[in-house]
Length: 56
Image 1: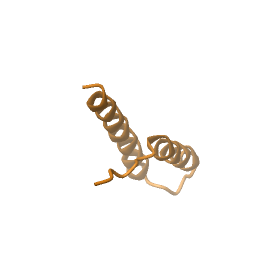
Image 2: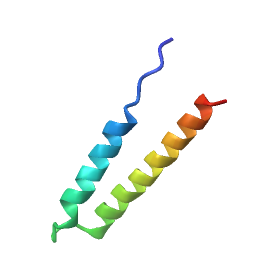
Image 3: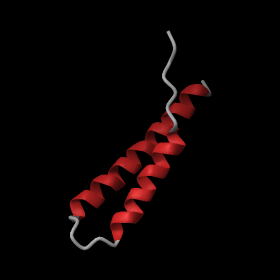
């Protein structure tokens, strides 16, 4: 069975672009920005886990 290919770079760039775009928005809640930053952190953990699994 083929494993789906996850483009971590594309996901990371989308999160970064979104965070940068909403930083200057005064009407958006800090909760939205915090959730995006948490998602970015989770993505970094997933990337680290993925690479460590490959190296085993």
